[in-house]
Amino acid sequence: MELLYIGPGLGIGTIILMFVIGGIVLFAFGYIFWLKLKRFFKKKDK
Picture 1 (tube, rainbow, N blue to C red):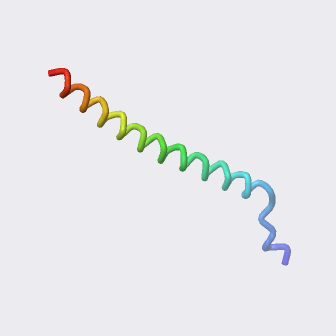
Picture 2: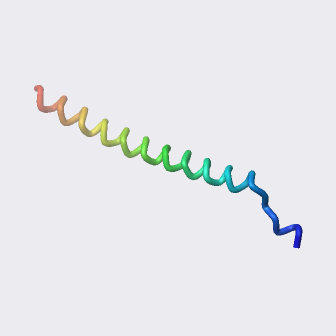
């Protein structure tokens, strides 16, 4: 059963990958929200 041992490196890599993907998703939602706010205030000025 030595083949089932993954090791500490893959666990740490998986955790880092989850944080990176979560950060990309949050950045995408924030960017969409920022564009909507910018467009809203640009229409309000005219």
